[in-house]
Image (cartoon, rainbow, N blue to C red; front, side, top):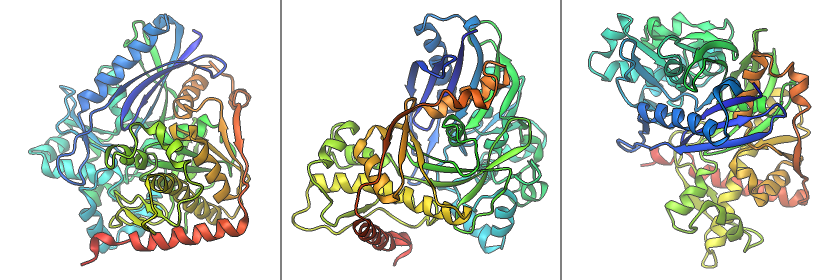
Length: 495
């Protein structure tokens, strides 16, 4: 048993990745997930599509590597967080499409809860803000709007889960209904202080406890699957961003990683200290390896790499995402143009669901390359806002930021990120750190790797980007960004 299989179920694709004992990526298989948009602001996935693409990818990656099921020591799961599913415990069939984390249909419910004075209670118990981003209000919507759902839930006939729980249920053929603390902490239903589902919050959201999964350790055997042939332990679970934090070996307090995907997700390890944010960040569970909860501060940028997809699909400026760096490189600067990609509102630290995408500073001389460069720079600016909030909350100044995700291949973006932050940006050799984190959690639970020191020794630097922009130039650019932000905020509420 020389390999670990990581299952990485994301927003746009399902992937299966095999890692060896050196933490080296052996092979990856990826299958896209169909996006469903029933109406503006709503985003759904077909639950059958999630499972089928993921199980097919797992079987295909083993076949492609010429491996047998006996060669796999354990399976680790990482997943898109907050996405909400409800299924029938007897048939295993979902009663509604999965409601994706990006979905905004419960924004009005969140507004009502805030008006009723519940915001501080939810933040104190869950570390989260009352926002449609999280699972609890999505679950409430399903119970309220799917015929008969609430009565069936109260009778114990239905099961709720985030994507990890849905995968575990299918992997174990319905024998195990479980999640881990990192995913549970994203539901608005889990008390990160007590480490349990919270009855008061369940009552406010009118969610029966009977639908909830067991909360298992992030690193520990939760069940076995025969998906690959012979029984294989499912031994690691981590929400995608917490898994990436672990995969970057940010296991000491104060270490920060940024994942550049569809959005950008920045996490700072705070260890055993539950740090309540004063700067509109989230306090979340990082992981539970069986020795108590470990915490992190998190800031989520809703539109990161997705702004490049918009340049491609919405504006037709590029034919593929890989072309954006060359196009942006045709100019040395944006010519005063700023693009605020608030297509789904603004996440941390602004939390403005009514912000909208804005381009300012256009002149007759503005061209395609200026827009491309402004789009790339917007990713770095948004990440900077979150990191500055983290530094204020943690009372520290960062010495470096570890980065991962597809957009880290863009050297121009990484250099600009370092310039704007004024600290080194470190890109590792293995960029699939989300899947690697799930593999590490599974491998540690089964003795595949001995301890955290062993996996830390496996982490290797590919390239370090050092800041080189003059301080006065940085200051001027940041001031311009914040002016642009002010014009984007609250736009949907302007009469």
